[in-house]
Image (cartoon, rainbow, N blue to C red; front, side):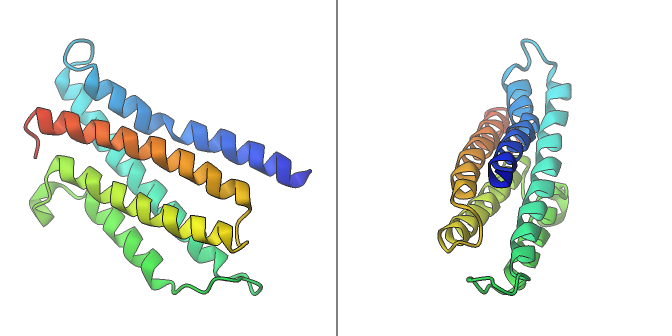
Length: 160
């Protein structure tokens, strides 16, 4: 039963963890009618920073799983470190890497997609429980959809 409790807790935390993405997308699309644009633009930055934190957490969780001596999948620590670095680069203002506001969200989408594929392979290999793969698929879908909504709104406003 510990596994069922763990599944319930992780599902609840995952759904709660989607809130910053969903609220940020909603704020941008409710602007300027309900939310002033200057406030909505703060939400896009919140989504970027939060997304980078999530990417770093997921990359670290996968790297931590490789420390298990009975681990069936052997992966270098280097991809997780590079993913974390790329997530960090995505939150740096566009004047540094010449990556516009909207396109920094795309970096997070690509990183989340890579981490999803990695975690699905780990779940299929038995490193993570099967339900974790299904949960990650749902959470990544909604996070990426929210980031795409943010990105599209920024592009419509001319924030390339």
